[in-house]
Image 1 (cartoon, each protein chain N blue to C red):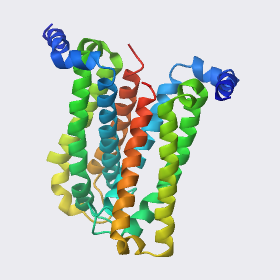
Image 2 (cartoon, chains in turn yellow, blue):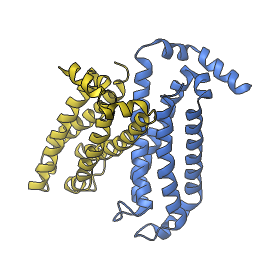
Image 3 (cartoon, chains in turn brown, green):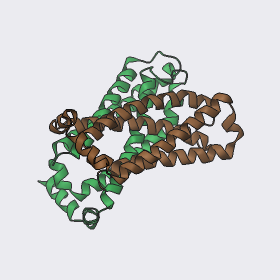
Image 4 (cartoon, each protein chain N blue to C red):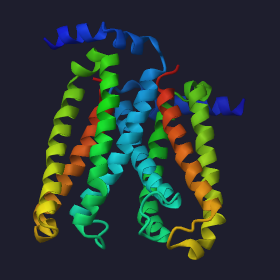
Length: 158
Length: 163
């Protein structure tokens, strides 16, 4: 079924256009990578703060309200550029096990980030009061982001 | 030419052969290279945005500098080591690659920009540390850095697409 969808998608006018213009894929990948660098660096700062390893002078709730709204905006850019890459080369992405692992990790980290944001909205000091849970959630989130980037690069090799 | 002879020697080393012959070594080194660059670019951009008065305006310049620069330096070293290994595996090919040359040139310009900022502009930071009165030289350094790093990433990505 996915194979049939890939065949259909790769024959759409938009996909054919992307396939014939040589610079589109690298250019879109560059925008995708620059946006990932923004997300990874911001999330790493927040995760290290949750783990108690950096930025302890700042309350967690303040870092959440500073970074997380930008993460959601960046995710829109990532989804758009990612969609262009998929439309241009459907089989390379949709049938790829590294791509699937990436999407699974992404879905998980989105849920975790929503949870972090929700809890700080109801109670400013929520994560400060639960140091162990904060450490764990920060660690898992950081690990997932590293996994997402790595799986993204490995799409080209598996 | 000495550079070409050096490239040929690099390629003939055991390290180069091991990277070329392994199926997983090159992608793994490349993944570390990408992860390091993401942290370099992400952290430096945060500082550039402070110099341009766009972000972290409520925090002093030195505070942002001291928080961010150690991460940028360590990640840059990791990126350079991983990049050096990738270069070693096919040195001659990369030496002749036009995008790779442009990337190195852009990297050099970014380095000169950092050097001028560190040894000259940043020396007077005490006078403009707080608030929004950033001198034009510091704003220029932030703007140039922002643009140069975008091109470093773009030429790096383009290198992978060219022979």
